[in-house]
Image (cartoon, rainbow, N blue to C red; front, top):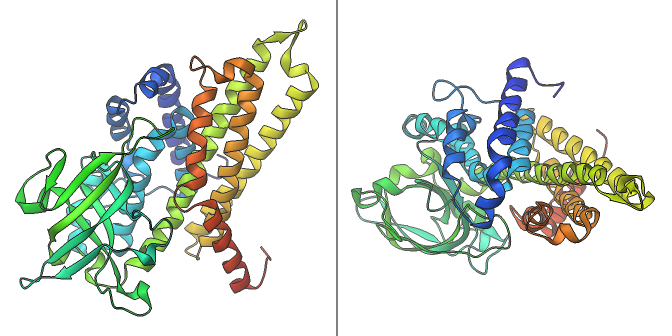
Length: 399
């Protein structure tokens, strides 16, 4: 944390204390029950987690991206789902702050900063995967100037507990190139048909059809959305201008991928810390198992890879804060950190031996949570494509 100012260092310490005192003692039972972490979310609101990306006068002032990376790592070290509960929210907050109209900023950002309004992104579609330009969700103009939206989305995290959805859709399906016809609609559930949210249908043509069953990432829901004749006011286009949504979201995904990389750091760190402690407590053949050559080699590799992944992620965070295009750097961080997180989680299971396969230890949870970062926010196969394309475009690997 040496590059953070005193205030940002204090923020990271507060989150670390919250994780150590409140999250880690009770997370195993909650995770196994797939219980929504309501009490943890309330504490996250109180300590300002949901306002980390929001500047004055709407919030407390955005922290630097390196600070955000370290806060996310701390949350994921306690439970990766807690980092997921604020990840999409942060992306939407940054999108509104950077691209929104004054009215959109004034309406949403103050309540987003406190967590009263929580937000999520709706990008992925069934069968569409990472090809966002192939989406089929369409918003058509009605006679009164509003939009009528039809389509579907899937794998939408926090869909039930978020009242604001940044919906990526086509406002001009015939545009060429296709990305010029894509916009972001700010779907305010409380404004659909003028009433609040009910379950399972929010009303106004938006239905949360089901929660998807998952290997890990428990507690926080990932839903399918069905959109049929949903009416959205014309003023809810992000920034007030159609056709800007793809470029806006690509910039938003830079911070999204840094967040996913940071989640992987947190999971990897938790797995390493547990493995390190277990290797000192557990004896075999009359000696702590860390002294056995192979276990010591695992630990050495784990800490080396984790440290390298953190430095790469912090480097990408600094590039992002410079205002420069950071899709290559964010992609490299996400790619490397997620693969490292998976490797460390597996090594932690190995070090725990049979207990690593037991639900009485947390090693198995890390192993279930880690794969999400490999496939989430754009698969690692997509990240490699992004990195290669940018490498060719830039024509240099000089720092």
